[in-house]
Amino acid sequence: MFGYVKPRPGELLVKEYELYKAAYCGLCIEGGRTVSRLTRFLLNDDFVFLCLLRMSVTGVKPSIEKRRCPFKLYKKSVLADNECVTYSCAAFAVLTYEKLLDDIADTKGLKRFLKRMTLPYFKAMSRRASRLYPTLSEIAEKHLKQLSETEGSGDADIDSAARPFAMLVGDFCSDGVEGADKRILYECGYHLGRYIYLIDAFEDCIDDEKKGEYNCLISEFGSAAGVIASSDTIRRTLRDSMNALCRAFALADDSGYSALIYNIARFGSEDAFERVKGKINDRSI
Image (cartoon, rainbow, N blue to C red; front, side):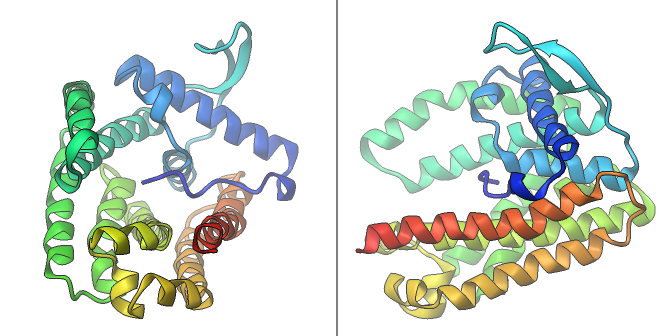
């Protein structure tokens, strides 16, 4: 998960945006305390969204308190520690470590050497997270192995290529939850994972073509230029994923801050696409 999904502040009430910022700060502080100080530098918005999804669907009411920020001289409003916060920090640590392993396998030269130098720190972070939630590493390893095999075949269509990562995020969202809430969270996570995988492929299409690496969108549209020319089609399939997430989330009881979830899923995802499209267009000029 790579930090794509974040809210559109102008469409939120002040209290909703304050909750989001408090949640981000809560994960930063809790991650540094329970997992690794590295999480304070690497944390991204996708895991804040995961935390808010789990809280909302399982009925956890947010509690805000004033705590001193590790990077500031003053106290800030912070989401108080709860199981969803700790779990999201652990999930972030495990997936970040697994992504580093994948990056090391895919890079060469100095970049690979530098990434390998950081490996012991990320491994320690993942181990500490796995002690808190042992199933997370099993989930990540299983689905990332499937993803590697799917991408290695070189001919998977968009949905087949995105499925392993979508299933990984679905399992991350729903692990440890039971009953109807588990089914709702899995569906939300599945469509979130599909969105993240495809928008990341969209952002990387130019680099992947230069390196000769597999990219499901290049496989579908023939080239990076074909991907860029098909941006409206890609926008629609990304929008379909977030609409499916919203339909699944609508089955849960109203948490009182559902508007924040819908804002991120609908408006935030559209803003992320526009940011990525702008970057690609600037590079292709």
